[in-house]
Length: 277
Image (tube, rainbow, N blue to C red):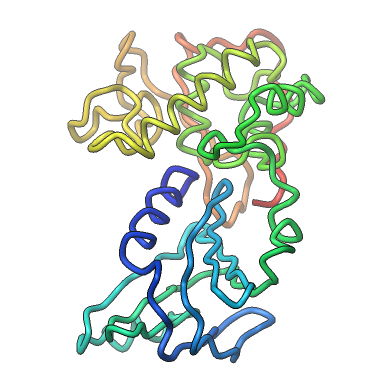
């Protein structure tokens, strides 16, 4: 699922394949700048912040995109065409100077902004463990501002820590031994921030460890709780429980936990969702 580590790996692939190439023709097909031609611009690099991807051009503009749950990127070889049903989902098209085409498919967020004003679109985000400017102390300060907030809601709030999605939030709750709806302030926030950073970095950078939280890459054994409803806990054997976090949530988030390894310390707290991503 697309989380901060997913977008980081996507950036690496796009960077290796396209940075330095000039756009021969192409356009935006969505967002407020829909119809804008990108022809003549050279791709000078990529950056990420949380789940947001920034594509920078040599004319001082930046393409800001977000995958959310459904978006993706594809590159086709020169002379190869995407199937028509897939082409119809294109929100960004770039034909490069070597004939290859880069496609941003079904992207819900497509914005073209001046590069010096990137903060207009990502400035609301909290610190990102995958960036060089990661500030663990700032992340702890943001999380501790509302210690009564439910663990899952606090970590899904991208203004606290950027890049954690539903999979990582559930797995971190298990690894910290905290009930997902317990107050965030009942766990050691310094240890939590350090663990979140370590997990994301391993997932983003270590070969074959993408979103493997148990250390076991075998199918059905790579996660402690996420996606394992009704199955025995890999640690204690107790049946894993699942709860729909918010009724009617368009992203269909679920919360999984082991009732023995993650006991609720007190009365259940609210299940508010995080801030917009």
